[in-house]
Length: 127
Image (cartoon, rainbow, N blue to C red; front, side, top):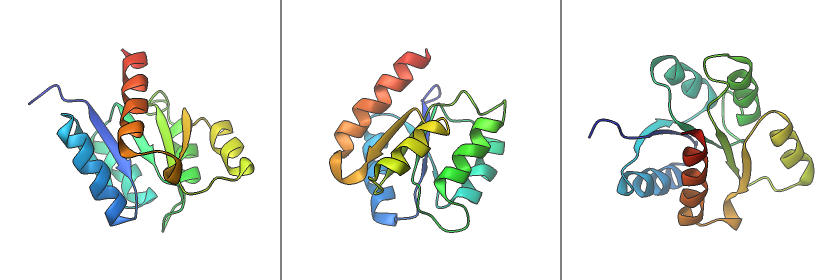
């Protein structure tokens, strides 16, 4: 079971977290869970994932602030980040992509299987 691709999910909604954690585990990924932005940054100090699924609206530190900090850090800046959020306004999408997100997915527009396909694309590009 070593050599699993690690994926960090940063999501404060337990239901959404459970869906993605289960789906990714079924596909053989190892999941690092973080319930808010501060927890995500702390966990990044210990484990570096191959990809980060990042919600925007969270307590303590929102996803856009986390994204800024990831992209400013030389160790983490090359990790692909997919924003997975309910915010669908063009301004938020442009802001997220402008801050360095690799993709911006609106939760209600993508099934977990479709998100998984996107993850596979980014992980393949990184190899």
